[in-house]
Length: 481
Ligand SMILES: CC(=O)N[C@H]1[C@@H](OP(=O)(O)OP(=O)(O)OC[C@H]2O[C@@H](n3ccc(=O)[nH]c3=O)[C@H](O)[C@@H]2O)O[C@H](CO)[C@@H](O)[C@@H]1O[C@H](C)C(=O)N[C@@H](C)C(=O)N[C@H](CCC(=O)O)C(=O)O
Ligand SMILES: Nc1ncnc2c1ncn2[C@@H]1O[C@H](COP(=O)(O)OP(=O)(O)OP(=O)(O)O)[C@@H](O)[C@H]1O
Ligand SMILES: N[C@H](CCC[C@H](N)C(=O)O)C(=O)O
Ligand SMILES: [Mg+2]
Image (cartoon, rainbow, N blue to C red; front, top):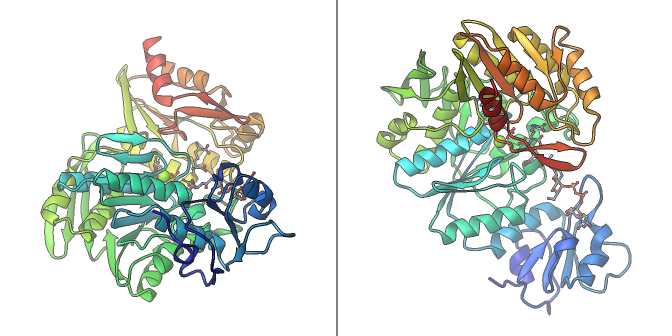
């Protein structure tokens, strides 16, 4: 829908000059500007959009919005706003109207993809068409469109949301990453409800320290929730307090979940096959259900999802029964094969606490050895590497350190950084060979965890993306035996 620049920038503090015509589009990437678009010059980690103003104008930009006036006269009007990223997000939400009306978001170091998927599945169970947007992509009950970021950039996000609305979808569950929150990618949305899963080390290549990482995540609670909206907090995580206080100071309705939860209290969790029997108390009423997912952490994710779904009007008579029908998000502690009396799981644990919870979840099933194949991503937080080595060394009986996505780093150096804290581990750089070796070594009663890449169907070496799937290689390895 065409809008005036004034409508587009409302709330940014700018007073655009009169005479600018209707705006049909916008972009923050000069390479993608189309005639009649507005170019938003954003600060980035490699450059500032101001450095690309000439290209934007050459391609037909009507005006430039930036936080600093670009050097020289670009030949089109320049409007300076205080927070250009937030202005971009709000403008994207307006230009791509209409948008789904009910949006919820989840933040935390681990569990976002799972929670967002579970909320969508609970909506579906309750007869509400819904979507989830995050690491895996944009997912509806019958379609998946893969994406590249956990929290898409504002333009892609609102374009996807408008497409969902056009399909009759009014309910969307989003993953709020710390990068996304810090870069204001979600600032065009007022969430109906928000949630916090847990906080542990990740992304310290981007955030200066844990305080900055936490503060980015806190923005979801302090800045993006509708007035007095529900804020779901997992109170079993040692880091829950700042999120609880943020919810209270933002006058949110605090809904606590966990063994210490007041809204949903976990009373007991007992293994039932690869799933578990869970007993909870929900505002005074005791309920029991079977969760068909492996790992205690999934109980927390499922209950957070139930709380979010109930915050959007789903009745508890749907929300809890729906949990017995949940399907795990692809590659999240997923049982992919049983072979020679042993079980093989693929999991997206690429951070120390995720690896620890995955191994802890599998230990009870390992009557024989608990084996793990894992690596660490290149061009990402290096501090995670020895921590992951230490976790695997402590918790598994047999370790193979291999490549994840080396990206532009030397894979041998990444492996060495892990091996420094996992002295007894074997090293097989080629991920296919590593998985095949691990599958070959399986004895009855063993459990193998292939960690780090989960749903990914690629491996990034240098700047090239090759097809690679842990699922496929496990199947290939078993077939070849
Ligand atoms: C660190 C980070 O978040 N980077 C994102 C950021 O890029 P950047 O800051 O490096 O941008 P830049 O290259 O400095 O350019 C600055 C500005 O100039 C523009 N530009 C640049 C070049 C040009 O020729 N013309 C032009 O207009 C850019 O579009 C940008 O607006 O803005 C880009 C455009 O939106 C993103 O694609 C890019 O994501 C990169 C690819 C990325 O890998 N991000 C990851 C780390 C990320 O965001 N991960 C999180 C968390 C993952 C998780 O835990 O699940 C996520 O939400 O996915
Ligand atoms: N609640 C949890 N507590 C601890 N570990 C978890 C939890 N949920 C998931 N995990 C672990 O983290 C991995 C990633 O889970 P998921 O994809 O749901 O989280 P995420 O926050 O979306 O991660 P990412 O930021 O990498 O996209 C899982 O494969 C599992 O190993
Ligand atoms: N969204 C995460 C994914 C990491 C996945 C892991 N396989 C790796 O490459 O490190 C990131 O970009 O940090
Ligand atoms: Mg995710």
